Image (tube, rainbow, N blue to C red):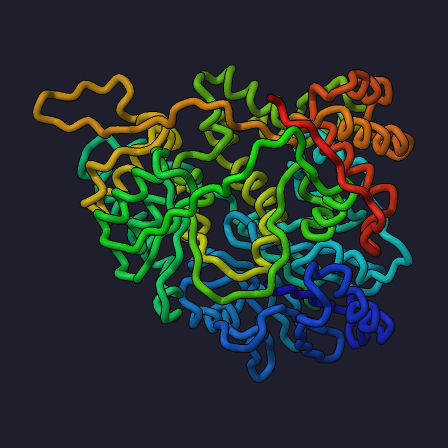
Amino acid sequence: MRVYLGLAAKRPGADIPDAMLHTVRGAIDAAFPVPPEVIRSREWHRPGISMFAWTNEPDDSRQPPLLVTGHDRVTGVNGYLAAPGEVGRLADAPKLSTEAVGGCFSVFRATEDELSAATAIHRVCPVYYTETPDVHVIGSRALLVHLATGGDRVEWDVLALQAMIRQGYFLSDETPYRGVSALPPSTTITVGSGGRTITETPLPTAAPAPTSRRQKKALVEELAGALLATVEPLRATGEPVNLALTGGRDSRLAAAVLHAAKIPLRATTNGLDTHPDVIIAGRIAQALRIEHTVIPPARTEKKDAIVVEHPLARAYETLRTCEGMTSAYESIVGYLPYNARPTMSGQSGEVLRAGTFLLLQSDLSDKALSRRVNTTFLRDPALFSEAAGEHARELARPWQKRPGLEALDHMYVSYRIGRWQGASRAGSLRRGDPIWPFLDNRVVRAALGLDQTWRLSEEVIHELIVTLAPSLRTIPIEGKPWRFTEGRRYYPWQRRPQFLTAPKTGGGWNWRTSPGEALTTVLRDHVLGHLDLLTPIVNPDEVRRLFAEPVLKKPTHAWHLYTVATMLSGVYPGKAPEGLDPIHIPVPS
């Protein structure tokens, strides 16, 4: 994981105050969620401009280096480039832009008279910015950007937190920290003699659906070429990529990409030998002639109850890792020392299928799509104060004016990827830097240029798989049939793509969504005990009603409220809470 921060004095000829430089150096322990002893740093200073960089990578073997230094400039890449040598293009471009560069990254650059940073098309590697009366601040961690301004304590943007309670992540460019904003997707921020400028490149407008097999083939081959370019960094690792493989669509495509690129891989699947995921993953591995390891679930004796960590400890670690932009309802990957071993999964493959907002839709009428936009921004209106409701309506208005398919497609990239994943993936990035083929800058740009209904039909991802790995054509998928086969007529000589569905079992119980009385009491006491802090954005009577029953009926909302209450109460940032007893939760018989 890498962390960057840049400072630029507003007044020509002015220096960055020494006190501010000292504040930045002292703030990194709070802002970088790894043990302080594993953090390495570099700095670059010129009159009026400074760049800081930190990492928990144990050495300088990863490319490009933490800071790439030229005769009059320095450049840092947060994430990875499909071709590490392209850092030279980013360093030397007259105007910083990520548009034509492959990889999953953001970039920070300082010269003798300019500070700039840029996001990729999905901003999953974020850039945050703020300013003081004297200095512009740009960085990759929102808390660090906020602390750099030198305040004695964190100032929360309480109204912005209404989205955290509604959805568990942000549906805007806001952050929890007053005055700190997230840079939009595909956007460059530049601070120079002319002041601060922000230049945004709109997300691509989808072309009409192709009407001929030739058009479809050309578009699929273009997207396949972009996917192949994403895995080039893995060629230099010297060992096989460990792919988390299931029987589904997205990890199968990841396997097909590695296979077509002739990059060695091995596959791992979690589950019982009788589960369709394991069966189908085994067939995929056999067809691609790769090693396949099955990890069965741990056998445990039946228990009447499980023991979980106290919610306050869980919330603290989530806030520390995700900076208050992910709810403690989510299970964040815990810290382990950095490991350069190459890994990959099918995560975020939904972007090739028009995103989760559209995948949830069975009705694609204009009215239904508009309702989905409204529900996303304005969920559970009775729970919120009038001020919070009006703020949410203001955020929703620009999206309500756009065509429904495009709105939900771009909302998925801007918020579900850019804000939710942009925050939550910090947990896994502490452990290493996996390649994310479906979050490649050029892949996402190419995907957004394809008609949403065509992507939603899943024909695009199916054709990508059979183009890159023809031997997978006849292997069924796990779960529901391919969407494009529904209602399609197949002649006797044609092969209909097959699928396998796992048998329904009594599994699926989750302690977070079935909290029992003991955990409900802990969540209730904490939220109601800090209700005065939440009152600017919630309706207190509705919050009390939410917790009125002995066992929560809407536990997701309760976790979101608990997270925000913990944030506002001052637990974070600071020392981790101690002396918390674990919670015993009964397991349904």
